[in-house]
Amino acid sequence: MIWVGLSIFYGAMFQRSSLVNNINIHVVDLDGGLIGAKVTRMVLDMHATPSMPVWQAKTDIHSLEQAKSWVRDHGWGALVINPGASDRLQHALTVGGEYSASDAMTLVESSGRMVIASMLFVQPALIAAAGDVSQRFSAQQVANYQYDKPAQVLGQPNLSALLRPISYTTVDVAPEAFLLAPIMTAFGFLACLLSAVGVMIMWKLTSFSFFIQVRFRDLVLMWITLILGLALLLSLYLSLAFLAFRGPEYNAVALTYTTATFFKIWFTGTAVVLALSLWLFTWFLNMPPIFISLPSVFTVIPNIISCISTFELAPTFYRFMYATPFFNGSRIVQYVVSGAYPTLGRNIGVLVGEIAIMSIALVFSIWLRQMLALRGISDPLGWFRGSMYFQSPVPYYKTDEEHARPRSAKMRNHLLSTENTLSVGRDPLATADDIVISDCAMDSTDLTTGNLGV
Image 1 (cartoon, rainbow, N blue to C red):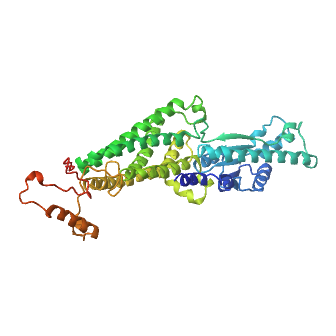
Image 2: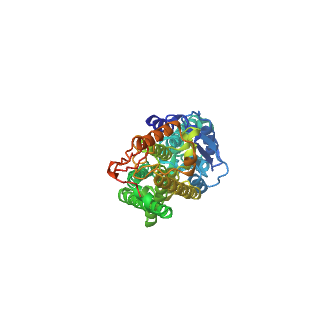
């Protein structure tokens, strides 16, 4: 089990640096002049490797604000050559005057889309590309200046524009740069889920009497209400912890924290914990103790992976994790705190659908647990009849099919020997005190104590 869990986790990570070319970043030419044409060509001609994002030209964007909006909603990042960059440089070389090289390009990034991938791959790629083209463009301009010197120089050329013609500024359109950002959702949801697991295992081990004394309808209402209350409570702690430890710089590097932010995080956490708790309790109710850790391992690990990695950097097999509650809850929280990559409709729909499906599964699991308990097939700890650890206070009631089923040779021999013991050698003058009742060793009913479980 440990090997399987570790294989799933490491399998999503070990090829991450060789799959970076699944991420696309864009170059946008809003200049339409010499700078725009040269920089675009330099960027697109950069040597592509599997460990670098792929550069693509984006031609349907016509303003810087449109570029920012597109990156925030759909993209990873973009290098934008600003409008009028070539004209400003030409003016500085012919007329002189003030010139700011950083007005030539803008690096537009969206750290809130996926903080870890953005920090490790997208931001370094944008900065490296901008720095490389800046140096190459400057070297070309200085080398060719004596040949391309303007025919008419109306003033003193700006030497800064000659030696350092282009540079860049950086804009994070969906900032999520506070210190807790990389681990906020993954470890926050994990802490809530592990706390819920401990409580639910305790409920499973101590609730046997409910299943033999309480009606099925009431059991369903009780368990769903208890799990919902547990999810609300644990998620409240999550939202309070984020409120307390988000950091003094939060409002400067993320969207402003408001009362609505608190409740959005609280109820998002509730939906995530509720969906997974319903799923795990469905398994816990009828799982023997020896296997009770299996659902937790195969639930926790995929959910953690979906938060700390992006699926563009994982093998295709891991795309199924788009459906995990952690991933969808994480996307909602990241949108709440940064405004990045809005897919709220899809994420909320997935969580609501999972809660509905897992509630139905839990109803079936409750019915099965009650049926097995009342028939003496399952004991309080979850062991089933036939196990060496089985100890149920409820006698085993056979179904009509089991009564009609032909007895095995072993059972027929046992009944025959019991009948001979009771009939052979009986003294007609024996009193009631002399009669011995043979207790069948093949059921769980104790005739000595009279514990019939009813």
